[in-house]
Length: 344
Image 1 (tube, rainbow, N blue to C red):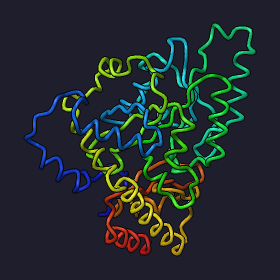
Image 2: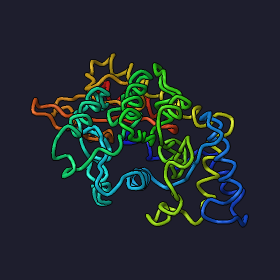
Image 3: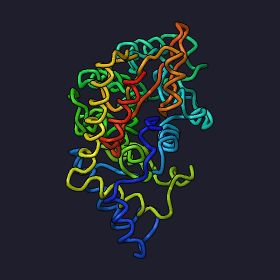
C-alpha cells in the first residue's frame, strides 16, 4: 500500500530532529523569547526582503488562520475568500466560531479574481442598507490553492491593488508555500509576497517541520498587541523554542526551498507517468498536489492499493482523487505508485 493522501504524513526533516536532540536539555526562556526564535525571525525577515518585519510562530494552519482573521477584523466585518478556500471548506467553521462570516466568492481553479473582488466590495457600499450587513473587512487567499494552483505575479498584484484601493488587508495562507515557491512555472517569489500582502504565513507543518507556521507582517504594527491576541486564543506555545529552532533550521542554507523542490520533482515524475498511462487530470498540475479523475470502478480498484484523498464524487460517474507529494517522498515510493497505476 502506497500513501499519497497528503503532505503532512511524515514526521520532520532529519536536520530538524538532529537539532532538537542536540538542544533538548538546554534551558531557554519561553513563549518565543529565546535565541532560536530570534535567529529564525532574522533569517525569515531577510529572506522576505523585509528586515523590519514582525514574525510570529504558531503551531498549525487552522489556529493561524482563525487567529489572524479574528485579530484583523472588527466585530461587524467578514473575510472574502474563494468558495473553495480552506477557511470556507476544511476548517470546521473556525472563522465563524470566532464571530466572523466567510464571504465566499466564485473560484477560478481555486483562485479569486481581482475584478470580482472589486465589484463585490464596490457593490456592497452602494447598497443603501450596507450598515445592516456584514462588511468585507479583508481578503483571504492561499498559495498554492486548494487545487494546487498558483497565483501569477500579475494576479497577485491585481488583488493587492484592489485591497489597497478599498483599504482592506490581503492575507495569504502559506501552509504549502514552499511548494508554491518551488514550482516550475511560477513567477512569484517570497519577496513578491512580502511586498504585495499585508500579512502571510510560511508553512512548516507541511514542508519539513514537525509542526509550526511562521506569520509574517512585513510592515510592523498592522495588528496592535498581536502577541497578546495569540496568547488569548491559546496558540502561544510555552516552549516556543521548539518552533523557532525548526524554522531556524529550515531557513539555513536554503533548506526550505531545497526540500520543497524535491516534492515538485517527485510530482513531476508522477505527472509524466500518469500521462503515459492515459490518466485524466481534473485540473492542470502546477505544484505538489495532483487531482486525477477516475471512473468510479477504477477508483474502487485502486483504492485497495493506493492511499489517496477523495476530493469529489461527480455526477458523471467519476471520482476526483488527490495525490500529494511532500519533502519526504522517496523515489522508490513514486516508482511503486506508478507501477500500481500502470496495472489498472
